[in-house]
Length: 70
Length: 407
Image (cartoon, rainbow over all chains, first blue to last red; front, side, top):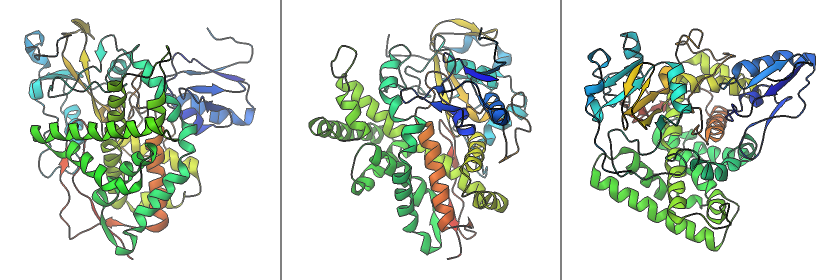
């Protein structure tokens, strides 16, 4: 599975980075979400899901690997 | 745009949407000023209502409407919003400017306040917090607001702006007059004094730039390679001075007051001094429940919002404390759950004007509490001291918080 971010929605709350720094970081310019490697290990799934649910902008989405963002 | 603004007469407001509510008025004896807001919800006030107090303004009570107002600057502007109206009011950069002009200073400041940039400040924040607490820890008591919660954010501002710590008292006095004085002449002189200090400071930094935010602002270039307008630079400095003081002071006052009367919460944080994830999650919950800011917007044009007619220049108050306890969004919203996992609070706002210093503010609270608990693991309200009185307004808080502990 992988997780993606819609940067038009992201406002830089950085809740995702607080919850799961293994997957999420923030860029040094605007503090918006950066996902270095969208595909994450199964043992991180719970933390990634928690980060997705905590995003106040609803900017994060988990995809099955073949799905693309629409 | 005329600076001579008259509040619209409320003839466009239907009688059923008028509620007599003064958000500055905290009845004597009320321990928590946020209760005046939660009382409105309990009494069944309409989710969008109008009060004739303080020049007249709308109030939004639903999480969804408050978030919408933060995001939609085409209707809800931050330009010249004070309530009650004061005009002209300094157009602070970038808070008082709508996008796209807003983006110029927002982009300039953003890199200095990212989580990464803030994390790099941790050591220095720890040193300054420890220094303040060491000053009174052995005494067994303090007025938390006077001795810590006002001093630490001001001290942090000195650090950000590359100013010597010896100037703390001078900046504390400027800030105290700004936030506490109600005398218009004193306030005007105080704003002039703050601008004079900033002007001198930016001139110094221009001549000899250092590794600090003031230097970064004053040496920055616009997209044509020119320095920014001097007035904008001063207005940006003014915002950075005032925005990070009162808000952090009163957030900490709320949190320490809660800890002083809640032994289990003190224990919770003491047990997690070495678990930054859990520590931060719990602070996030205290930020949700203790949202001190009630923010203002100004309607840009005659329009209808959620079926309610609004007029250009109508003011709107967005109480974050109400949004953060909306039962449609938060499970068991009135209880403090330090393990709360999903916490989409709007304490820092959302949208283009979302608090740029939010990561710094959270870090200031976290560092302060860690340093405090290492030195003062247990504390309570001083029983022989009168409790400070509570105040409302744009930032809610307390005038004093006397704490005691065993030496």
